[in-house]
Image 1 (tube, rainbow, N blue to C red):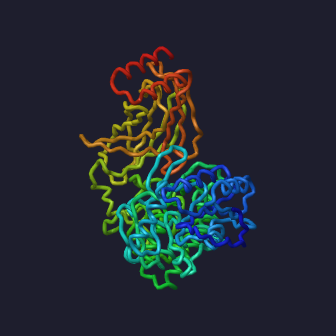
Image 2 (cartoon, helix red, strand yellow):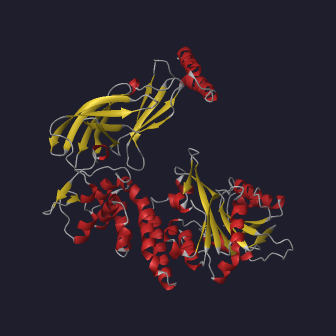
Image 3 (cartoon, rainbow, N blue to C red):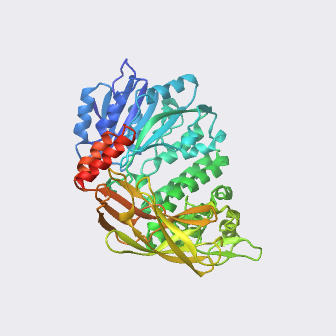
Length: 569
């Protein structure tokens, strides 16, 4: 069935239990997969509305074919492109025939029991919506994980968002099944003309619902493509655009206003914490890779909003995140980039300063304002007293160059902000393991001033022991320091601008040749990144054979792999 946005479908005696809206725009390739996941549901009494935001590719033809094959599918085409997710969802809500509603994006899927599970939860308790776990699938690696797993670990019915304000973190509209009467009674629709509409819609749903049920089973399969083409990237993957920052902050302001108007100001701190911990944190991880102009624009957008957030929201954050936030608020943007490279990794600062009371702060000078001193205070980290394996050092490559063949010569600077290392030269080790066996390269770090050491090390990649059938993957070398029998392993941060270096490694000791690439990691901390790629006849013949035998265990298979490698090299 095909309809224009203004049409109203005829009444039917076979009313579906659930209407699922699939929004689509120029996604003819993946739309059939999304719809197939709905038609394969274990609860078959559903209505599928393909809501097309005026696609210009083959989507209309594909959608009409899908509708022609199954009477449960309806095709709705908007008269013009809206540029977002809200309008196609809203138009589908208007024509939905079922008492319960769900939403699906055309590049995702529903697990086969999603409808059954969420509908059963509605049958067990009179609630306004039910929600379940979201399975995230990395398109590039195939790895799966659960979105916000701690929030959906336990089955329960929640009597309003005040009972569990942490659920603001689960802001996806697609992981839920809504009672249509609840949406209609509250005139709840997706806000049109803005991005991050899910965040506002979900915040409103949480606040307006008298009760909702959470189940731990997966009800949505979300495909993540972190390295997709920029023009095809989802809104969430367009953080490099300042307009993206502006949209996100604007939506937060709308949520804040709604909380006040609806009488839910009491959950504002929880919502502010969610913004700092989730939304701002995503941008913070990208700061080392942004240029000066972008950083200034970012600060101009976020700082007025950050100034109005609840102080208690900041206090709930880890110290490393509070430091980045304060450096951005103070306009110390180059330092914010340095601090952001350690987020989540326990990387120390380059410099610290002490006040008259012995309190330790980020940076070379004691902050002037009380607010900055509160946020940049590192005293609680115990940099000078924590157990040595957890001590926070900072290892940076200051120069990297090819040293002939597949060897890299590195100049390394180590910062010791807690003054944990004894005075004098230190023995350090550069460690990398492309297989089960580590390649460990000792080198010397000499003190250049208190808390700063420098050294030179040559990493010969031909000495790295790889498995007999080769190794395909990426590794990030570590720096190891010791204190007696205690060992500390830390990240090795690379210059983010050094060019990619590539070398062919023959590995004549009984395994396939490889091409090894050295480059800075393109995200996160920006570590030194080494990637091995098997090449040659052994890669084409031996690796496929040994992978098929991977299920067989024992030394016989390993010996066979080594023998085959020696024949093919």
